Amino acid sequence: MSVVTGSRRIPIRWRLLAAGAAAAAAVGAGAGDPPASAPADEAPGIVAPTANPFGRGPARTGRRDALPGVVCLSDGTVIPGQVYTTRDKDWQVWVDAEKRWRHVPPILVLSIRAVVVEERMDKEWRWKEMGSDEKVYTGRTRPVRRHRWRFHLIDDSWITGTVKGQPLWIRHAGRTRGPFVLHERSAGKYGQDLDDLVYVRKVVISRRAMADALDDRAPTTRSVSRDTGDSGD
Image 1 (cartoon, one colour):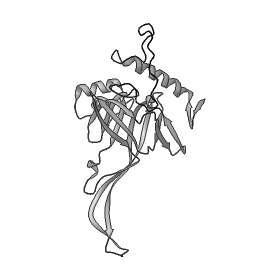
Image 2 (image 1 turned 90 degrees about the vertical axis):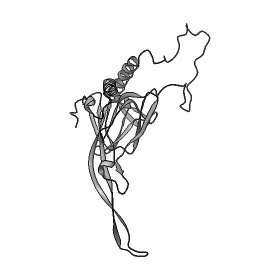
Image 3 (image 1 turned 120 degrees about the vertical axis):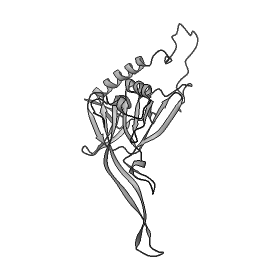
């Protein structure tokens, strides 16, 4: 059974899992996270401000929808912190086998892994001369890579498909890194090679993985090999 919200059909089990995950995240936030509102007996006569329709709430150190985790890049860099995507937006994944978009709430995601579909070096060509229909190779190349993205969800299901350029950021200790964009296709500059075209290899949503990476501070993904069943590479 599923519930339709707007143009999205969200399975009931996902709604229940999301509610449980949100409750766990709230408990795990610790005493440092301010309460949603002050108890009435502690603030008599004070009315809490209404939500700002433009999305700018009271000053905070981070986004309420951010989740603890790590972002692992293809060059071996591991970035720990609070991970988030565009505000109020699910991960949108085109599943070709089903011929439909899947809308995945970020709080349901355990990990995201890049699946490299194709990588190649494209040649640069130019017209031989003005008005000519003949092209000549300039001798320069650039790297091109195509991806699909594999999502592991908290109910232990998997979704693999295309993401059309959705960004993510990661924030820790007052510093924000990103956006790191999950592309269907990415291309480098002429003169670069494939190693220069750095991409997001893996995202792990896990408080423990974030803590381990903060402790290690090493350019390795060893600390996030718990990627919910993935062996790591």
